[in-house]
Amino acid sequence: MCETELMQKAINVALENVTSLHGGPFGAIVVQNGKIIAVGRNEVTATNDPTAHAEIQAIRAACQYLNSFQLDDCEIYTSCEPCPMCIGAIYWARPKAVYYASTKEDAAKIGFDDQFIYEELALPIEKRRILMKQIQLDQYNLPFALWEESTAKTHY
Image (cartoon, rainbow, N blue to C red; front, side, top):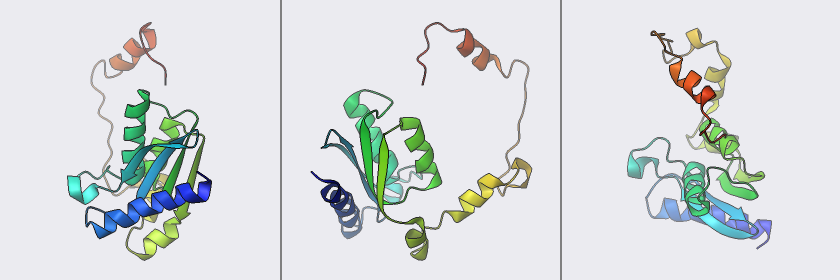
């Protein structure tokens, strides 16, 4: 399949999601060596899970399929430019490329505006809308120390 056919598949997933009333207008696929190995659709409202964005769902399914926590040599096609959460997941999954159709500005026009998240991330922690406060107990850093010393860990 060529990249336009793959993008059409991601858009079709989004269309199917809207017409089935299953979730938001977002779809994504993960491709490895020209083959679709995973499909994800926005299921936030269907599952009451704010992390169930199309890209996250596709990444989860692809990682299960590959039995790996990384998407080496994979590409993600998504119907819309990924939000900050999905961008974070994409970077952790490490695909070689992401292709998108609609922009974040297109999404904002229909009520999916994530600009406030970019703005919040740019603020110092103490100025963010949601309280984020460090609480340091004795040995709060022990899990990190044990991880650092471990010879059985899997790096990622």
